[in-house]
Length: 258
Image (cartoon, rainbow, N blue to C red; front, top):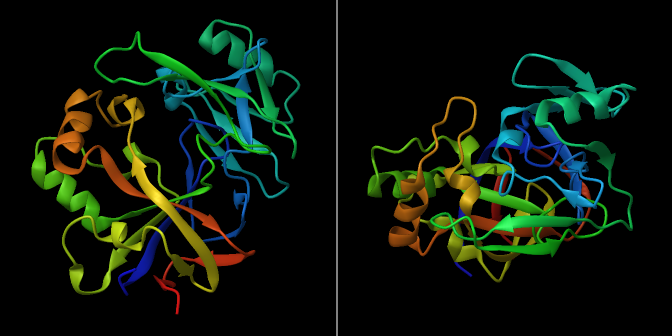
């Protein structure tokens, strides 16, 4: 694994699966990911959790964590509700015109995500299960993306809106010396320290249809995915699993472990 160092410049968490998230200055984490990250989902009566992969409208809502741990939600029309609001399920159901409930995943609970696998053909789908206790798309629990990678991707398609929100990372880093290219991929297969927290770098992040979806301030754009496919085999960023518990903060260093 290449010895590299980078500075944490942004931290993000997404309290409700596929809703807009919130930037934080510091956050606790462990093997299950960031505290309060994707611990809530909007669930159908059949047990499917809504995702921007299959229900693009959910990306129009935003969620944040209150001091008491409950979740505040703002819908696209400005209606506000919360995880402890008795009417939250009714408000979500009225918004998306189908029976829905907001659900906090229990530690041993899993749900199914209905996934459009091909941005070019949305008839191609598959179902997969979330890991226990959170609404992640894979066994990885933290997603890291560098500004270097965003620049490299945007160089291949300068007309695109390469706002970091489109890619929903937990950690955004800036490499020392302003390194060029998809630099963080050199860490794959090794251990890095996030501040003082060790993390296994499992694999590159393979992008999907959600990168093409419209979000607040971002247009629907199929060319985003097409360009990533050509420039980096549809990969952007890396997936990690923390190996210990701790707290990380903006300004701390990410580096390969000794």
